[in-house]
Image 1 (cartoon, helix red, strand yellow):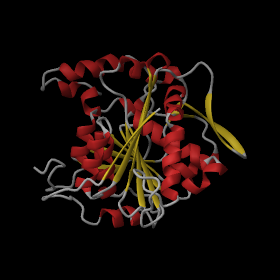
Image 2: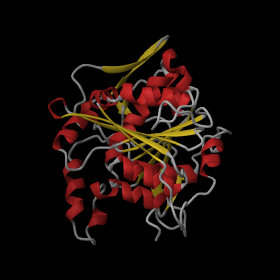
Image 3: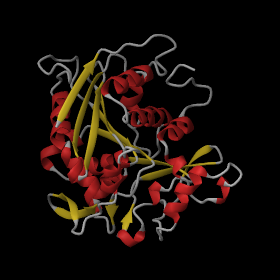
Length: 333
C-alpha cells in the first residue's frame, strides 16, 4: 500500500470559491432534513472528479474550493492480477474539524479496473452488522474497499485524535468533528460500502459518529436486496446524484443479481436537479450497454435517440451540472 501526503496549499484570487466552507460542511446537515446541500454537492463532486489525478491536484482543488492549507493524504493499492485498483484521499481542514474521504472511480484506460467492476463474485460478499443480518454487496467493489481500508482508518483515527495527517507527530487546533465521504462511479460505490462498514461495526463507532453525509455521483449499485433494517442508518445520510442518460447507475444488470440502490436520489432533468420519487431501475438486459458506447461516437442529431450514453457518465458533466449559476470554475474562469 502506497501513502503520499501534502499540506499547506494556499490559493490566490479569485479563490477560494467558498469563503466559509468549513462552517458550511460543519452545519450542512445538522437538521437531518433528508435534503442534499447544493454547496456540499458541488464541492464533493469536484473532489470526486479530481480524485482521478494525484495528491497535489486534489489538495490544490480543495484549497481553491475553500479548504485552504488543508492536509491531504493519498492511500492507494494496485495489484493488476487480482483486479485491485483502489485509491482514496483523506482531506483534513486546517483547523482539523472537518475531513473529506473521497474514493477514485474506475480509471477509463484500465482494462483491469473495468474487469474488476464486473467481478460480481460467484459467492456472496457481505458486510455484517454485529447483531443483525448482513447485507450482500458487490464482491469487486468490496475487494477494492478492503485493499486500502487499513490506511484510510489509520488516517481517520489520527484526525479523531487531533493529529495532522501530514505530520502525525503534530497536533492541529481541533479533533475531527465532521466527516463526509464521496466518490464518482466506482468511487461512489466504495463510499457507500465504507459507510456501511463503519456503521455496522462497534470497533469503528467513533468514526461512524462523525459521519455527516455520503455523496455519490454516477454511482453503480453496490448492494443486493433484501436490505436489512440497519442499512437505513446509511440510507438516511446518502445523497446520490444521477444524470438522466448515465448508464452506470443502472448497473449491474439484473442477470448478475438482485442489486439495488439506497438513499436519497437526485436526477438532472431539463437543466435542474430534482429529487427522484424512486431509485434508478436496474438494467434488465445487457443489450443497452454496447449502445451506450456507440452513443459516444454518434452524430449530435442522433445522440437523442439513445437512451443511455457513456459520455454522460464523465465526472466533469456532474461538476458542471452542480456548479451554481454564475460561479467561476475551479480554474478561475
